[in-house]
Image 1 (tube, one colour):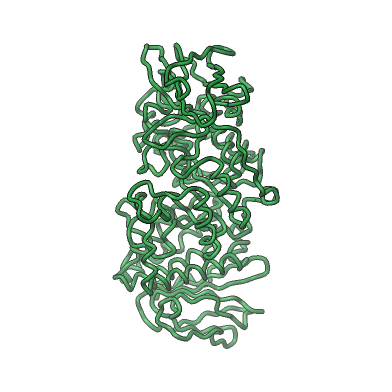
Image 2: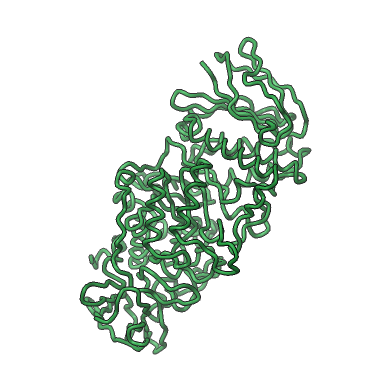
Amino acid sequence: MDYYGFYTGKIFDAYEYLGAHPDETGTVFCTFAPAASSIQVIGEWNGWEGSPMGKIHDGNFWECRIPEALPGMMYKFKITGPDGSVVDHCDPYGFQMELRPGGASVITAPSAFSFTDQKWMRSRNPRKEEPLNIYELHAGSWRCREGEATDCWYTYEELADLLIPWLLENHYNCLEFLPLSEHPADISWGYQNTGFFSPTSRYGTPDGLRALVNACHKNGISVLLDFVPVHFALDSYGLSRYDGTSLYEYPHQDVGVSEWGSCNFMHSRGEVRSFLQSAAWYWLKEFHFDGLRMDAISNMIYWQGDPARGVNNAAVQFLQNLNSGLKERNPGVILCAEDSTSFPGVTKPVAEGGLGFDYKWDMGWMHDTLSYFQSAPEYRTRDYHRLTFSMQYFYDETFLLPLSHDEVVHGKATILQKMNGDYEKKFPQARAFYLYMYAHPGKKLNFMGNEIGQFREWDERRQQDWDLLRYPLHDAFLHFMRELNRIYLNCPALSAGDYSREGFAWLDCQSKEDCIYAFLRRGKGQTLIALFHLSDAEDVSYSLTLPGVSRLRLLLASDADTWGGPLHQIPEHPEEEENCFHFRLSAFSGRLYLVEK
């Protein structure tokens, strides 16, 4: 290993040296614990009695070889700190862990899995000018085994068999997993980690995860992983006070404890940077993930996520080094930032002073749009410009439109439930809402269950309410979402010009009293017109002049009876005279038209 690079926070391959590495003569164990006074390896081969480790290199690393330690056996490091305290820790660089509530690492042999996605890996790219339709998923609660009260998860391989057909049928071309690195508490959803190099054992083995990713690639589906570079779990067997001191975390509580009660990484330490960079690259290189969504970037940009406390320059520099290093190793990977701040340059290249992400979640769009659709119709003239504001700042960054897990939990209500009105009135508004989302510039992300009109908030202990599809309105809503997704993937005007000012133009953003909006999208020689009427008035007449356009063809109408809307027949081509088109619009409706030459 490049020790100088390790100490200065430059390397991305520390996992190739640190951790447990079996070969034909046993297993070599190596860990970084500079303040420890002694370390022993305990495991299944010795009845959890200690085998001493010795200091190597500069005395900050500890190593030993144990012939009896074989792949599949569990182990921990028994670390005596400088104050004489003794704590058993899992391996920070361990490649596998036992099922919670146990916290032991597992010796893992080099992978025997053979990927067959070489062509895919050579051709992948960040898709700036392509459709990117992301299905965000929690692997343990998408579907669960029938008849099992607890731990009813499918394995990674079984998920592949069930999930890939669903993604293909519903026209999602990208899958994003909530964190899969090992974590002790189900209720953390994977965001409080103990095993940053260990795929959670809840769903099987590391090779099972490789098989899932490989199968997705075989079917043309990208796979992203939620990565947590900000904080880690407090559990004593994890990274917390690993060598008896604050090795990975801050020693001071005012910045050392996150808003979630976990430990904040100390990004100014080179050893911590090398650890996190190696973990990020590990998932991309060893599992062929196509990219990372990085959690809580706001809490790295600013101390404790609070702009009033100032910029955390060390963490910002870490992000720049991380992203530029990942891009140097594979330019085609996708790097997404969950960031709700107005910090400039999040998606600007590092060489130009930015953070180097490909995409930033547009939290402003999400909050404004959901707020608008939550408001009663009588207030929508007041709130009219909540739907126009996003385009005033949209070109400042490369934005992705998210409707994630965070929007369907903790009393926030699901996306469908957020829509104003009673049960039946929520559906037309949700259809118009989603049509607006998919017509709006920016890549798309939806959390599982959104597509079936889930009413119950997400609970990591239960699968989605698939029996809702027995009810006509939910079944029709699924089919509407399916057709909308299909159109999105097949109409270049909805994606090729996302980040070009030529790709979008308002046609009407002043019909405040009628709550009508109209805009066009352009891309790769195609032009589409999106039209929305979001008041509760029925059968509204509306005219729109489109110079140089003589014919429009209807692609999708959210108010068609096919999807549960009120209209049985909607003209495929609206009436036109001298480039002026005339429409009859239902309450809470959206239309998408193709400009025909």
